[in-house]
Image 1 (cartoon, rainbow, N blue to C red):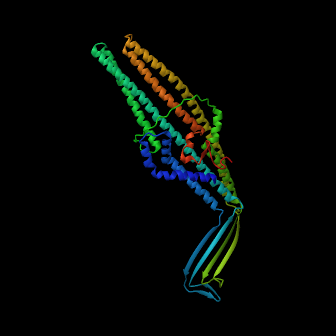
Image 2: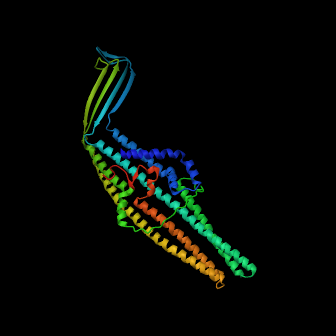
Length: 457
C-alpha cells in the first residue's frame, strides 16, 4: 500500500499539469530556461512518460481486480412472463398464465488451491514492473534532456568562438586596407585578409547551423515546436578528476537500475505463473446460495419464496494435456526471464564501462585542450609582435589566429564532452541527482534508490 500511495501521488502531481502544460511550456521556452526548468517541461509533455503512467494506472486496476476475486459475488434478477393456457394440478399451479419472479444469488470462492493468491501476486508483480518501467523512462528522459541541453550550449560556445575569430580577422583586414592605402602594406596583405575573413565566415555559418539544429533537437525532446527560439541559461561546468572503480560501480548499477530490477521482477512473476498454471489440476471449492420470490406461486410449492444453498467442489480429471502444456510454457518463460536478467546486466555493464571510458577521455582532453589554447594564444602574441616589428608577414599571424580558433573549438568540445560523459555515467549507474528534484518523482526515489515494496523479495 505504501508503494500504491506513492504512485497515486505521482498521478495527482503529474496528470493535472498536462492540461495547462502546453501553454506554460511554450511561454517558458521563450525566455532563458535553466536545466531544471527544461526537465520540468519535458516531464509534463513527454508522451513516453504519459504512456508509462497510463500503463501504471492500468496495473493499479489489475491489482484491484485480483483482490476482488476474493470477495463474494451478488446477482439479482427480475423476470416476468406470460403464457398460454395454464396447467394446474390442485393444489399446485405448474404453469400460470403470467408470473413475476424476483431472485438473488451469492457466490463465495474458497481459495483452497491458492490459485487466487497466485493471481493476486502476479498482478502485484505486473504493477511493480510497470512502476520500474516508469522509472526507467524517467531516467532516460533526464539524460536525453541533459545531453540535448548541453549540445545547445556546446554549439553556442563554438558559435561564440567563430564569431570572435571573424571579428578579429575583420579588424585585421580593416587595418591592412588602411595601411595599404597609406602605402605601408602590400596588396597581398589585403587579399590574404579577405580570404581569411571569407574562410572564417564559412566556419561561422556552420556554427550558426549547429546551434539551430541543436536547439531544434532540444525542443523536440521538450515536446514543443522545433522552431521555438528556446533560450538557455549557461551552466558552470566544474571539471573534476574522477577515478572510476568500474567493477564496483557496475555492481552498484545492477542493484539500482530499474531495468535490472524489472527483469528480476519478471522472473518472480513467471515463477508465480508456473504455480498458477499447476492449480488447474487441483480442486476448487465455492459456496453459493440462491433465493427467489414468485408471484403467483407455481411449480411444486404453494408458497411464494424458495431458496437453495450449495457447496460446490470440482476437480479436473483429464483435460487432454492442456494444463501440462501450459505449465511447460510457464517454466520456459521462467528460463527466458532469467536469461533476460543476465542479458540486462551485461548491457548495464557495457554502459557503465563505456561511460567510464568516455569520462576519463574527456577529462584528459579538457586538460590537453586547455594547454593547447594557452600555447596558441602565446604563439599568436609572438606572431603579432614579429609582424609589428616587420620581421614576418601577415600570413604567419593569420595562421596563428587559425590555430587559436581551432584550439578554442577543441576546448569547448572537450568541456561539454566531459559534462555529457558525467551525465552518461549518472544514467548508467542510476545516480542522477535531478531525479530527486522533479515533482513527478518525489514518491518513487529516495537516496538515489527506487522505493518499492517487495521488489527484491
